[in-house]
Length: 199
Image 1 (cartoon, rainbow, N blue to C red):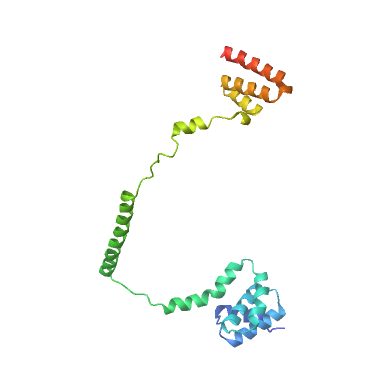
Image 2 (image 1 turned 135 degrees about the horizontal axis):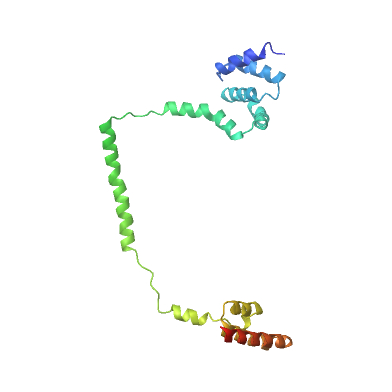
């Protein structure tokens, strides 16, 4: 059992240094006593990663199971690498006038791109109908419903749309198609004719 694990863990959190071997050993002892201690497991995992120890690959799946949000764990484990890379990158400091010059240099580039887009739009060829393509009137004529496609449902739709002539024609075609139902279709035609007179 670790001597006073609360104090040791508090010291580790306050002055966490993943490169410190003593902290790694203390975290390992705490985890031996409390194997499901999630935050201690995460801290120990980070020390193993920074110190490039083989135990990192063994502890990673266990810690990820204990973690509520694995994305947060991954970001935290990789945060030190990103901080180091951001420290290494040099940021240039500019005065107000320098920024003004930089922005003015970028404006012509944007204007050039916009001009290219405008030129393309103005010069782009328009799509024209060739003589071989059908006009809209021809398409409407060709789109008339063929006799094979007429159904009882279509005839009912014609009636509800008050297209009585089309409905009568549809029922006539159906009565020729289905002679056994011809008496039913004849009744429907009579009903439609009565509706046509009322309207």
